[in-house]
Image 1 (cartoon, protein in one colour):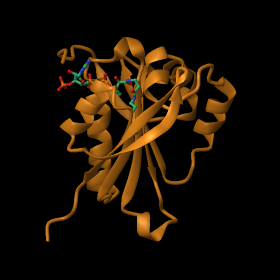
Image 2 (cartoon, rainbow, N blue to C red):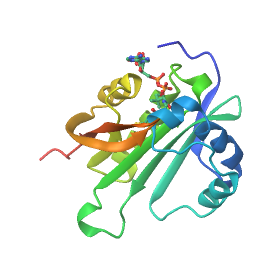
Image 3 (cartoon, rainbow, N blue to C red):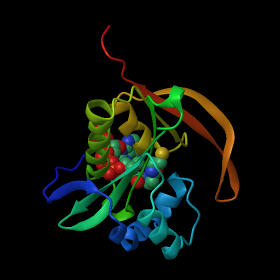
Amino acid sequence: MAILTMHLTIRRAEPSDYEAIVKIFSCPKVIWGTLQIPYPSVEQWRKKLAEPAEGFYSLVACVDGQVVGQIGLQTFPHRPRRRHVGDVGMMVRDDWQGKGIGTALMQAIVDLADKWLNLARLELGVFPDNAPAIRLYKKFGFQVEGTQVAYAFRDGQYVDTLMMARVHLPPK
Ligand SMILES: CC(C)(COP(=O)(O)OP(=O)(O)OC[C@H]1O[C@@H](n2cnc3c(N)ncnc32)[C@H](O)[C@@H]1OP(=O)(O)O)[C@@H](O)C(=O)NCCC(=O)NCCS
């Protein structure tokens, strides 16, 4: 991984970040690696950030004040038997990938989950050919639990999804 020489900060996403976030969601590699659809709507993202779903924590990575990556953690405060779980999704702008931004975002969300939200299980789905994402998730203790066959449609073809989870139970 490249050594970071830029000034990187992680903070909560704010409604005013919507234009930068649409720019990230417009990147070809981001669309390829996620379930986003090309041509994201600026207005839909403005609304989504202004009225976040309950239990949703969204962090952004900023380099010299510019938003270049985002990670979201959806929790389930109203589902008593899933209160210990969080769903993770993340993306880094195409021109900033491979520079440690994703690692910094994941470290921040894992710390939030472990040390403040008391989540025991983090879950995510990843396409089997997304090598950088799988490497990043394994680095943080995520393990493959199974394959969902033909889970999504991507660029004209069905694609499987690996279900990964990181289980962090308190010592007995
Ligand atoms: C996946 C993603 C979030 C990772 O963020 P990032 O800033 O690029 O990640 P980092 O630079 O912190 O680390 C990536 C790791 O993958 C490794 N990597 C990079 N290219 C790789 C490749 N072709 N094969 C295997 N590993 C690779 C890097 O070496 C690094 O591992 P290391 O820290 O052990 O050296 C980012 O690439 C991205 O947004 N991709 C498009 C959207 C997406 O796929 N989101 C995830 C959906 S599940």
